Amino acid sequence: MFGRNNKVDTGWLSDVAFFAGFTEEQLVEVAELGERLEADAGVEITDQGRMGDACFVIVEGTANVLMNGEYVASVNAGSMVGEMALLEHRPRTASVVAETPMVLVSFGVEQFRALLDRNPSANERVLSLLQARATQNQARREQG
Image 1 (tube, one colour):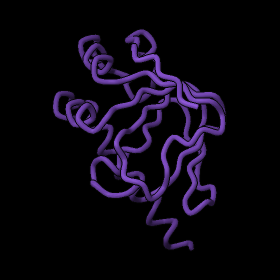
Image 2: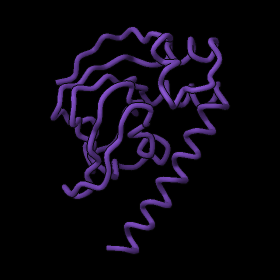
Image 3: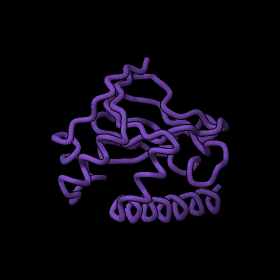
């Protein structure tokens, strides 16, 4: 079950790896754009095949990434998930399921675009993340 708290605290954002090095002003902007969510273990954060309407930065907890029902990776605090569907305007390529209780920051489509447009640091990190994921996905295809 997802629990919504709405208020994003810049204090704990500064401890999240994805936002490391952001200025206080940038963190305030992230806090204004994002929504704080909590998820119990077992909750599906993203659903493979469905169109995405949000992406998530993991603040606390661990989740499993599944493609076609098979485990492919674990993601934990500091990771972003779900951004590919927003950037590429296509269905989600994987499901992400909470392995432990989690705290996340959620960004809807418009908020995510605003985050990238207004913040060069976030834009660079998302681009680096996409490059790494593309490399991992290519390696999986070559193995399988």
